[in-house]
Image (cartoon, rainbow, N blue to C red):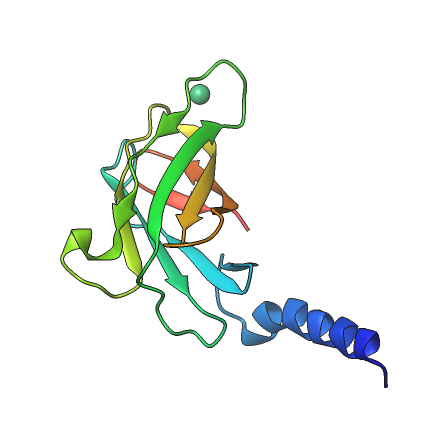
Length: 140
Ligand SMILES: [Cu+2]
């Protein structure tokens, strides 16, 4: 088999994996990283969003800075921007980045997670969420 075919098969397996595992997972690969927005029980307006970052093998990635931009799925709203946070800012260097964030309206949002390695380009990943008074839910 040639290389290209192997790559194609590998990609196909990766896409099948989440379904095969049968678990709810909003992580997606951004340049070989697994980026997962962890929602809490807390609904609108909330205080923070937690972003978990892991490498391909699932090991926590702790040396990024992470910020978030929130936009609603309709026009005419001011984006919510956050400062960049370090992993250890929440007291634990564990690959989970706690980014202070408050929603400014109920409804559907697009959360753009921005990951900056110490050297290298910033990576972004969009996660769709639905915000109600008692929960923030990731849309699959
Ligand atoms: Cu709005």
